[in-house]
Image (cartoon, rainbow over all chains, first blue to last red; front, side, top):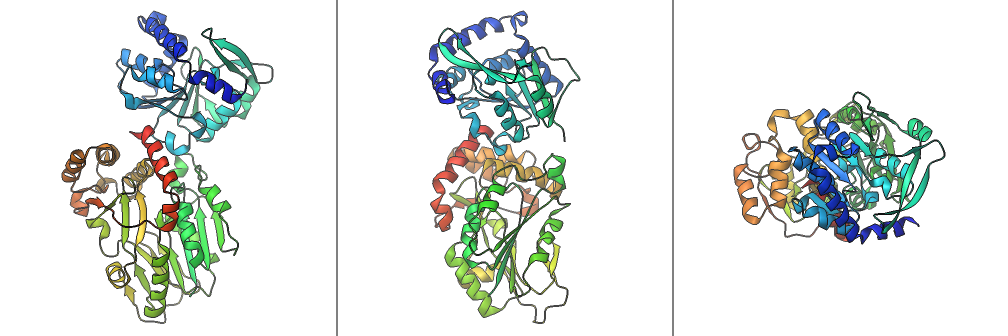
Amino acid sequence: MNYSSIAESWQVATKTFSEQADLNTKELESEANYPDHWIDCLNVVNQLKVTTFLDIGSGAGAIYRLFAKNNLKIQYKGFDYSPEAVKIASSYGDKANFFQYDFWKLNINLIAPFDLLYAGALFDVMRDGDHAIEFLLSLQPKWLLIGRPTFTEKESYDEEYIAYDSVETVKHHHNTRWFEKSLNYFKYRSFPLRNSILLGFNG
Amino acid sequence: MKICFGMIVFEGDYVLAECLRQAYPFANQILISQGPVKFWQQEGRTASLDKTNYIINNFPDPDNKIKIINGLWNEKDDQANAYCKYISPDTDYLWNLDSDEVYKTTDLIKIIDYLGSENPSSVGIRSCSFFGGFNHYLTGFELKKDNFLRIFKYTNGATWLTHRPPTLKHVTPLTQQENHIDSDRLYADIGAQIYHYSYVFPSQVYKKVNYYKNIVSKDRCIDDYFQKVYLNWVLGTTNRKKEVEQIFKGVHEFKPEYRGECFPIKFSGEHPEAINLNMKNLTERFDNELLFYR
């Protein structure tokens, strides 16, 4: 699978995003059901007093719904490469909060207004996640929260898998040493995160 | 007539290529100081992270007119003075060129002819400052006489006394009588103006107001200008636009008590050639930025 076939596969995955939204609905019923990376996200937003939030790869809008459920007053924007995902996410809130956009077209001007960039599922659907992180950090976001990162002692690699029994995709595994050494950012360790990595500009 | 265009720039890729495209044929030199002042260094910047460096480093320069000086600067005065030592001694005029200022070819021809015939010591140029896109420009305060001083008679070794307002300091006094041509007179005589794309793109306005509010004139700027005025106007219906204009007596970021009226009006003229050629991409960029900033 190359980059464009993965992207195409997700672009038309209406059923998948609907299923994801249904699953999110169940998870949102009780805090006890929240996945760890959601709890991390809420903690980071609260601890850093985030007021502007960019959800990169917003999918079916889970994080937006999480914020609404927890009454977080936050300026949220989310984009996804899949118009189908955007359509479903938009059904949960203001349409202007969601839009279709290509991750690789991000630039420093587009991320400037945001306190926190969130990539919760980006590296579940993208080849060469190391490059994607380097690209994001080259834009010097104030803070970047990566949800559910997967690390390996081997060289970084992509693992092909079928998501929701229907979408062919890849998950990126980051080499631990690359992650530790290559980033011109620091990992923020003053509060524990369960299944996320928070990077802040080391300026 | 030898013209040296001097530019300071940091993350100003909006119409930079168009600005250079228009000025290049008329330049003897184009000197560009690139890099962040202290305010942006504190934000972690050591160089422009947008396409500024790509544009200036790759701009076609068959006549070897362009010189780029990269650095970290205390303030804009230092940045402007960094290029002064490269000004050719036989330069007649030093022309302060901002990266968001574009001239029509006919205006450049007329201005340079005018410099030859009037031999001014300095020149102010009227600014047609675009607001909220490419279809409206600012009136009132923004059109005030000599808001934008741009062209200065050059003597060997001259440097900038200040960048704001641009004031040139000569090592030896000018031999000629002071002969300032103000922007009203220039416009009345030859109709030339700057096409100034200064309040166009959301990210551009967002950065500008942050910088101005923090560094230049904290108390003079409207609080939450970006949301209350710029975005509200750009995204608003015709009626909403009028309301915003009435509340703030215009749409400039300074409070009305400091700047008077500054209403936007519809632009009915032609943009400079390089802007027209790239209008599709420029408007696409504007629309994309709005997705993130609205």
